[in-house]
Image 1 (cartoon, rainbow, N blue to C red):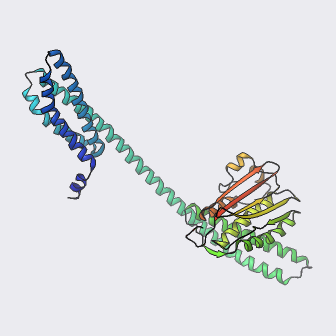
Image 2: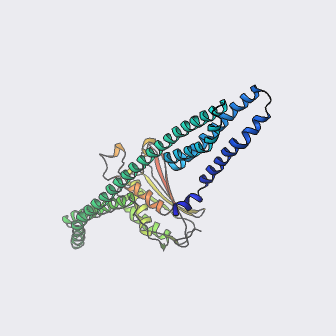
Image 3: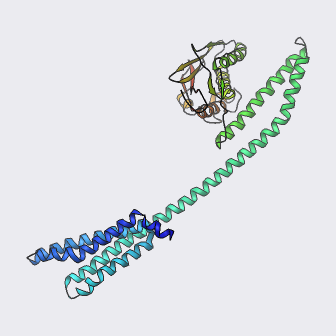
Length: 376
């Protein structure tokens, strides 16, 4: 019942019915009337040849549409139906050349239509096979990604458990040792290194989550200007240790926005950390922020060695690091790829411009929202 209803509402079915009616009308009414109007045998022969071509073409269209829509079996069935339509003419006209022309039309049209049916059927089989292969490969990739995230979570858990104890112990140790003590520097080094390692582990888990689409952001209302000031103050100390100067140029006006404060802070820290890492000694770093066209826009510029065109093309690829930095600098190459993903989750954009031996400018912008769902 359902298949019958599905067939009746299928537009291709009614196209076939219309073509069959046209074939029937053409054979039993139009063709004989047109031939009767012809006065000479030559005119009749020429007209009859044209009729054969038209009938064959119409036959091929009917069988071809059927095969394309309903498969090879459908093409065979429709060929048999047309054969029944032509049968009376064939039987009646066997004593005349016209009868043999009907036989020729039928076999030419049937052979061409069935050949087309086979081609269509083979193509559908190939498409179905390819679709199954794609589904199987997709399922394999999904399993591999799930295994990867499971492995990453297990790895993070195994690393975080002892690391939490190291961070707590080193913090307690550095707070109880006098700054003048020789052990104070060691305790501070252990604490800073543990904090850095903890951030690297968090980045590794975030990237793994982003690869399978489960990395999320949590919207909240906050003052971005205050966040920028806090990050600038925090990173100024790191810059000054390398003789660098971090200049903060706050926006002229800034309202509270809806965004993930923790993630925006993470983006700013990553960009400024990279600027300090790749800047020249005693160079300047400028942190700019502004509001334009409904966007909260931030720029981080440095006076470092810059990035080549080849490096720029792969800069946001996970685990990618410039060849010249692999031996000299630490890191997994996850920071920028993670920044890009976090900005995109905010429906924002990130870009970079760089001139070799002069420096780089990283820019990102996110929409200013008055609520988690709407843009201003």
